[in-house]
Image (cartoon, rainbow, N blue to C red):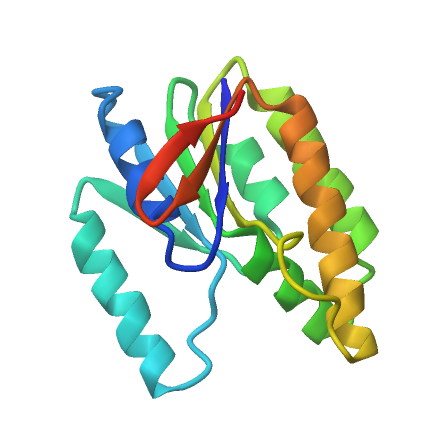
Amino acid sequence: MITFIIGGVKSGKTSFALKKAENKGNKNCYYIATARAIDEEMKERIERHKRERGSHWTTIEEPIKIGEIINKLPEKSILVVDCLNTWITNLLVEGFEYEDFVESFINSVLKNREKIEIFIVANEVGLGIVPENELSRRFIDIAGTLNQRIMNICDKAYFMIAGIPLEIK
């Protein structure tokens, strides 16, 4: 089962994903964190989020190869992937050919959808203005296309607005 949770920045996506996952009552809870601790503020933010999740979550910090991690998870696990936008940013900043990583991720999700329950978190990028620089426009194009692909393969989807989930699929 694949659940996609999309919305604006700080709209409550991650909290909602964690609650939905925890309500499944499964003890094998995994959280793939794509963020990197690039400065002190980010290190503190990451540590705070770890504490908020609690010790029953196994956190896997993987900024690039998330598809490989999904393939290694045990059967009947619960997984939250947070977040696709940070992951795409990592790929672009590091200069990777993102297409191969995106395909690996999508293939891993599809291959494992019967084995594990997957919650995918992403920011909606289509509600703002077109950015003024090339890298930002490229990011928006990649993220928007990836969001559409995930929406097409997910079983359920929610759009978060100021902490309120709207079921859209």
